[in-house]
Image (cartoon, rainbow, N blue to C red; front, top):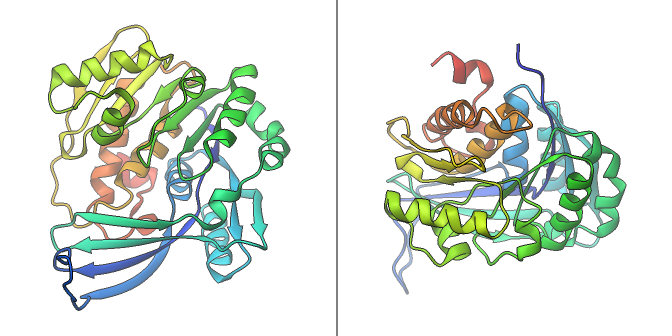
Amino acid sequence: MQKRKNVVVLGSINADIILKLKRLPKPGETMKLQGFETAGGGKGANQAIAAARSSSEVHFVGRVGADAYGKMMCDLLQKDGINIEHIKTDANNPTGQAYILLQDSGENSILVNSGANAFIQEEDVKNARYLIEKADVIVAQFEVPINRIIEAFKMARAAGVSTILNPAPATKVPDKLLELTDLITPNEVEAEMLTDIHVDNPISQRNAAKMLQAKGVKNVILTLGSEGAYYLTENNQEQAVPAFKVKAIDTTGAGDTFIGCLAAKLNPNFDNIPQAVHYANKASSLTVQKIGAIPSIPTEKEITSR
């Protein structure tokens, strides 16, 4: 039986406001919504819940506002057994919000108001040092300040804890952060931002992964949406792993489900990347068949029974 992973997530917490529409409006066009709902989200929260539902012990480091959305999100995280001791309530900034434009096709566009996520402080990370040092892995994304991620990854590296960086939303990344990263998981857009290589075929996938390794990252997994994923390990093992073919209703949270499930199933030395990627791909395929982020994230039982 696989040991239960101890996962720390340093990340964002958002309330997702989902706006359902037939298609994106054209410039100057006014459209009626087909529906509206509010759900839990934020890349950090999504990934933490995905890891927790795949049987990991999860601790969260982040911030929410002193508002109804903040309480809603803390309640949601606790419902999945996530330790929220290091989620600080910020009296000066609101809980983050994401406005998701969900089209009939299942594709989405997202507008984010960072709110309290942007104000995670150095002391927040320092106060969580003991959690980071006893973890199997720490996961971070770019909806929180990059300097806080660097600080946390330095602590993890010094303690021999594995680091997973989800470089989303796409942005330029300091080399010093890449050098602290054991595994990076960009999609095609993020990979191009990091390497200036347009990723659209197997050769470009490999070239982008190799360039990331040259910048200091040990292992690379490119997430390729409906095409699945491609990985390149520090031992130069590589493989394209096809996605499970399903009808997508809403792609919101699919990438986060992949990351959280990956963190839950990877061995500390990453020697089971093929199996973990297969598991994460299957989890993502279930997520896109439902609406919303957190409500769509499957449990380990749901994933393994398919």
